[in-house]
Image (cartoon, rainbow, N blue to C red; front, side):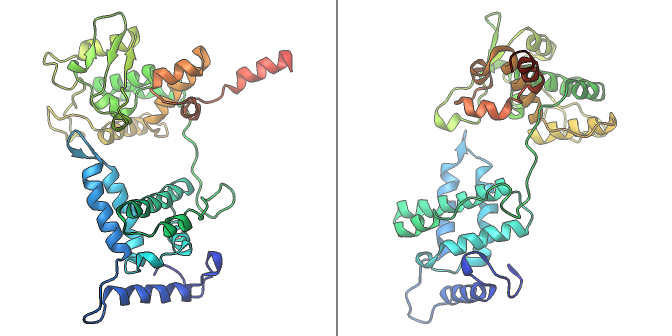
Length: 339
């Protein structure tokens, strides 16, 4: 059941109304003999998925975005897949959002999924299967605001303390410890670390350049360059493979590690190795992205946010600001003198 009986929904839509709309959807899905079939929400989603299988690709492989779209659209299809597209209302989108709240999704994730549903309808407008007025009406549904909704809030990702990083290193294999330290010094994303190969490194100068073959903004035509100084070079030097086409970081087969020799790390297996090491060290497990946040904070504090933006590979300073924790202690020192 999507909703409890008699529950009042936003914009005056009751659960009775909702059940009536679901019944309308069932009628649309089973038209009478000879009746012209209506273009349904389920048809719209199916057409968008066909587009997504072609559009969301890197290096000939589907990206994870296709899976995200399927997860996002499934509740909509289950509840309202049989509704005619041209009868879809903002209240229906609000009720979809209400379901996500009931399922315990975080507020920020819910806003992303609602925006994703609008993206599906926008594609339909482009294809001529959705009236433009429907999309304009759906844009009136405002995003959930912090402190003004029952949706769950998530804690922002914080930098990880240096003590917690180095306390875990003895519990890691040499390979995974090197990956952690490389992230700590450079601010690389976990996905950029696990795919590193010898052929992707330019070692001709005092600073090495690493160009990840796949990266977050690749589909926009942006180039990602990671600069590797002496600390990063010392970490990498003993691990560089003789065959430059092979990954730098190979999993070490052990009773705990089910990866076969020669397999590459994924962000998931890399993260699991760090979480297990945290537990062995008696430390609360921390996520790999906190290493990137830590690097952003240190670089911003030492050299300024513009250089941090370039080093981290961000297109805008506002993105870097999300990663760089404000140095409150330094701010207190300044205001103690001048405030």
